[in-house]
Length: 80
Ligand SMILES: [Zn+2]
Image (cartoon, rainbow, N blue to C red):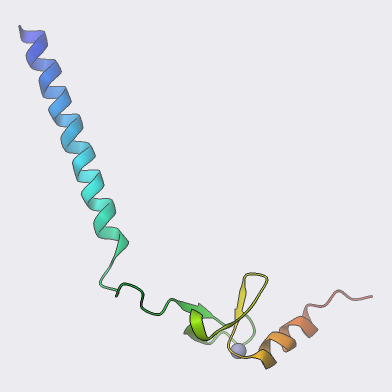
């Protein structure tokens, strides 16, 4: 009988623990920010932050403008 009580208590504790973890994970996901609101990206050349949608992308990097993308490519071009 005592064993059953302990087993039930452990199960409840485990369920509670998982529930708390689930709730915590859900809360962390949206820290005040809007749903699909601007994900800010940093220009790899000048460091300015701008919305991802407005950035120029290259190989996973983001740039504030086409000019900075070209500038970055120039600087990081393999030297021959
Ligand atoms: Zn830039």
